Length: 261
Ligand SMILES: Nc1ncnc2c1ncn2[C@@H]1O[C@H](COP(=O)(O)OP(=O)(O)OP(=O)(O)O)[C@@H](O)[C@H]1O
Ligand SMILES: Cc1ncc(CO)c(N)n1
Image 1 (cartoon, helix red, strand yellow):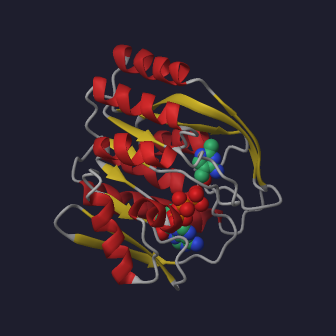
Image 2 (cartoon, rainbow, N blue to C red):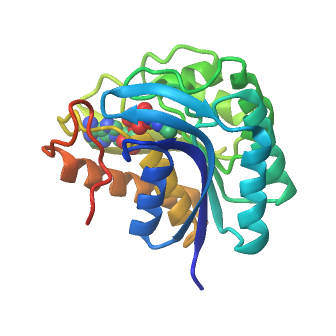
Image 3 (spheres, rainbow, N blue to C red):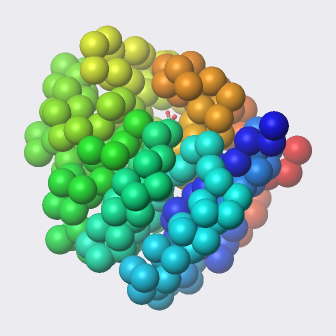
C-alpha cells in the first residue's frame, strides 16, 4: 500500500527549506506527501525577509482535512512560528493519535533569522515533545531545550538525556553546527546513545539540511519503525544530497540541497 507522510511546517518561497524541501524528500524517498502550512515565509538563499503567520485554526483544519480523508503513516513537524500554532498542532496530533511524529524544533534559519517567537519554546517543551517519536534539534536548539551549553561530546550526551526527560521518545542532536572535521549526529533512544558520523562536506550549500533530514526520517519510518535505522537512512540521504549540491550555484547565498534526481 502507498505510504503517506504529512509535513506541518512553513513555506520557503526559495524552495530550499520548509514545506518545499519536505515534499521533495517525501517524493524522492517514495512516499505520498501532504502539507499543513503554518506560515508563509518570504525567503530566498540570502535569508528571511518576512513571515506571514497563519491562524492556529487554519493549521488545525488542514491537519484534520488530510488525516480524516487520506490518513497518515508519519508526520514531520517543522516551523511552527508561535505558541498558539504549536499548541494547536500538539492537540490535533494527540486527537488523531499519530504515533510516528518527527519534530524538528525550528527556531532560527541557517541565515540567522528567527523563525519562532521566544515564548513558544515553553509550549514546544510542554505540549509537543511528549508527542514526539523523534525530536531533531541542532546544536543551538538543543542548548535551548536542555538548558545547558554544548561544548563537546559529553555535553551532547547530557543534553540528549535532558531532552529525553521532557517526553520525546528519541532525541537526535545534529552536528551540522559543531566545530568538527566530521558531521556527527548523536541519537539517544532512551537507553543507548548511537553515533552517526560522515565527513563534513566543504560547501556553503546547506540551506534546508535540517528540514530534509527530519522529513527523510519521517519518510523512512513509513517503511521501518526502527528509529535508529530511520535516522541512519536519513543521514545517508542528506549526505548524498549535500555532496550532489556541493558546487551548484543557485541564488547568491546558502544554496539548497534538494536538487532533482
Ligand atoms: N557540511 C556538511 N557536511 C555533511 N553533513 C552536514 C553538513 N552540514 C550539515 N550536515 C548534516 O545535515 C544534517 C542537518 O544538520 P544541521 O545541524 O545543519 O541542521 P539544522 O541546523 O537544523 O539545518 P538548517 O541549516 O536547515 O536549519 C545533519 O545530519 C548534519 O550532520
Ligand atoms: C520555512 C522554513 N522552515 C525551516 C527553516 C530552517 O532551515 C527555514 N529556513 N524556513
